[in-house]
Length: 69
Image (cartoon, rainbow, N blue to C red; front, side, top):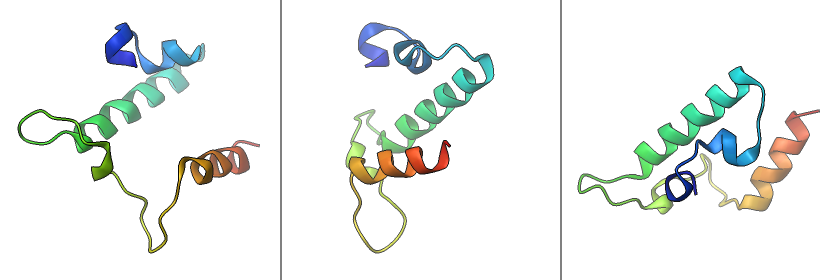
């Protein structure tokens, strides 16, 4: 979305805290670099949860909620 709208991920999410925005933008850039192959094609399936059990976005949302309180 950030590339499509030409905005930083933190801008799309409306994050006002400068440090938090910087951290989120850095993580987004890092994940995109990990998902990009040598030809420049992005394959998000390259990024996996560490561990034996496959997890979903629902698991990620639960993790974030649990650790953000």
